[in-house]
Length: 236
Image (cartoon, rainbow, N blue to C red; front, side, top):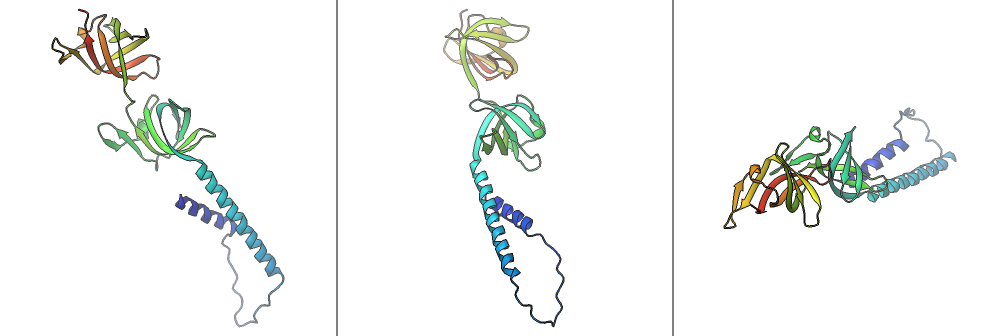
């Protein structure tokens, strides 16, 4: 913040006092006598300084009004260094960034440097920056590409689509969900000794009760990508 204020002050000083060439006065001449116009010049200079202070104070107030905040959400679109981000609690916000100066990281097993080229619609982001609530714009200072937070579901299998690798389940409140089985999905079950053993999609049966750890499908309501499935009760 101090660096920003100093930069603003210098910029405004240069605006008020442009550098101009001066013609050197002849040497050896008589000392000039003060004229009444000098006081007017001093008054003008003081007025400029007063206006300068007001401008700096106004700019500082504007910077302080923008709160440093963090948001997480899913990218809706990205155009001209502006990201439209759908957040769960604040609705849609606009994240601005500079591709040359804004640091970006990818979070997997550890943090590593990322690229803005990897940001696409449906990408999950965590962003930090200065937020202006009036126009819902975040001046992005750090951007993280991350996996969306996991969702936990429990329900009874109502239908299995063997061709499209999807499972429909119904929870205890009779709410329906569609679970997509992905290539990375791990399927496990409890054996007769209540030990967890590895199984597969082919072993799932209608009326099985399963627990699902997954991530939300951003394009379709009540649809999820399964990371892990545990068969907790089989009706076989």
